[in-house]
Image (cartoon, rainbow, N blue to C red; front, side):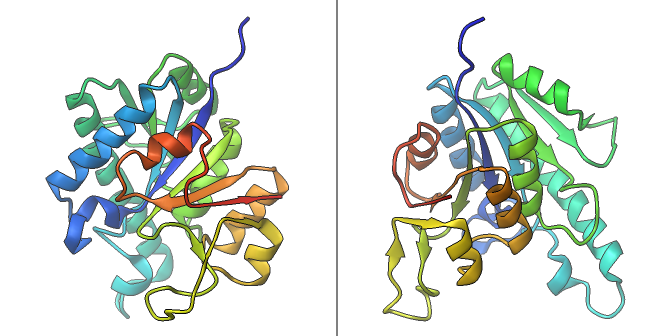
Length: 237
């Protein structure tokens, strides 16, 4: 057998599908992101995607007093499935073969998540979109992305964001914040750099899963990061 192709796990926020409003689903934002994924896929890279649901439902902020945390988290998981189906249609409209797998079974619209089946889809050149988070409350979609990246034996976890990397502080509120070209997992956790939650970072650290954090709005960044080029900030051992 020949060498395995490069495989990546792309983490998208739900807000990225909402465009400027960061709410609902903006067709132009959806089509642009699908086009960027297609460009990366054209390099021969195997791509899995985990998408958040914050453009539709943000459990911690939206639940108020009337909805409990567990129910709110399940509602968020359903929101990720809506986004996954939208991204699937956008990709297939561009001729990219795609499968959606969910941690919560909804057999009418998507496959249940099965690790071996997901890997087989990737080997056949299909983009696999993982929805439903981990299938459990109290875990973020960042943690779901870290988990799926490890499970499918990805070479890197690509974290697409609204900024061009990891900063020493929030660049929106602190003009003196500086971008880091690279940082270790322990430093990111110790300094609470807000790249991902601590559970996701720890999972990647324990399994030696590097993370690339980069600006999604820059054309070609997904393809560059997927190819292993130095864009944004890289988090490694």
